[in-house]
Amino acid sequence: MIVTITLNPAVDTCYYVSSFLLGETNRSDQYVKTAGGKGLNVSKVLKQLGADVIATGFLGGTTGQFIAEEVQKKSIISRFTQCKEDTRNCIAIIDQAGQHTEMLERGPKITEEEAKKFFQDLTELYKLREIQAIVASGSIPAGLGKDYYCHLIREAKFRKIPFILDTSGDALKEAIQAEPYLIKPNISEVASLLEREIRTEREVLLALQDEKLRIIPNIVISLGAGGAMARCDKEIYKVIIPTIEVKSPVGSGDAMVAGMAYEITKKSTNEQVLRVGTTCGILNAMHVETGYIDIEKFNMLYKEVQIIRLN
Ligand SMILES: Nc1ncnc2c1ncn2[C@@H]1O[C@H](COP(=O)(O)OP(=O)(O)OP(=O)(O)O)[C@@H](O)[C@H]1O
Ligand SMILES: O=P(O)(O)OC[C@@]1(O)O[C@H](CO)[C@@H](O)[C@@H]1O
Image (cartoon, rainbow, N blue to C red; front, top):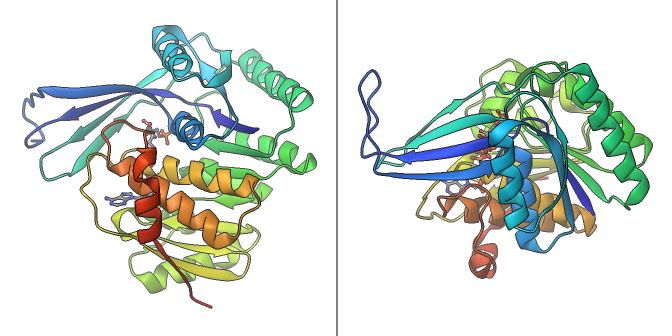
């Protein structure tokens, strides 16, 4: 069983426009609304891969209700903790050139009681199920504290459960102190973590081997259409991907995390973990819906992903 944690889920609305003009009135004839938030996208992809998954986190208000219903429609088992304030809305705008702009709400404020209840609910799960991995993704809502992931990581480490983390900003900066099993920042997230510009392949390589990140066993830096680079213990890998027709890359990082988590629970090789994760990321970018992969195209794309060991 894989447990996903989405502390800050979102109703994701993706608007399609011919061109997006800042400071102008933009109209859209086509939009797609999905139950999102990084951990929920991970859950959806895990489900499509055939993994046993339980989605957890906070849900509140009518937006929370919308997500709960969508999760149920997809037959994903969930144990969400209720919060008083409404779950947030997030917006993505994609123009004809494929350029995308996002507007992310901060989300609800979680009370102390709700935070305690979440921890109790998670502890219940630990008792009831055999958990092979925990995947925590996304921002931390107000009220929880920047170090909230640290508590969750330490608890998982105590129970010898690999903790896979995909977050950004201060939440990531704090969380690395607790040594998660794997982190998957994108290039701007790792640049902000290391407080320096990272652009070239050499700079990505140096980031993977940075002293500050040495305590993290596995780091995968995703590079969007540029593939990824990774360090698994001391081994460094470059992931080369095919060119595809992109519909929406929103949630590709989450799909990648789902594929990697699934392979980690199967104790697969580093190469296989990276290849399956990358294939899922690409498949997500080929669809408008976040957290959707066309499983029928999996084998074809899987063969086109190249994993090169650099040392
Ligand atoms: N435009 C694209 N073309 C092909 N593959 C892509 C594209 N964008 C993303 N991918 C695949 O998905 C993986 C993760 O993408 P990306 O680096 O954009 O993650 P991210 O920034 O964390 O995304 P998000 O936060 O929206 O989930 C990439 O390593 C790549 O394999
Ligand atoms: O604010 P966070 O939690 O960092 O990111 C939220 C979000 O942008 O991430 C997902 C795509 O990865 C979307 O479903 C969602 O709207």
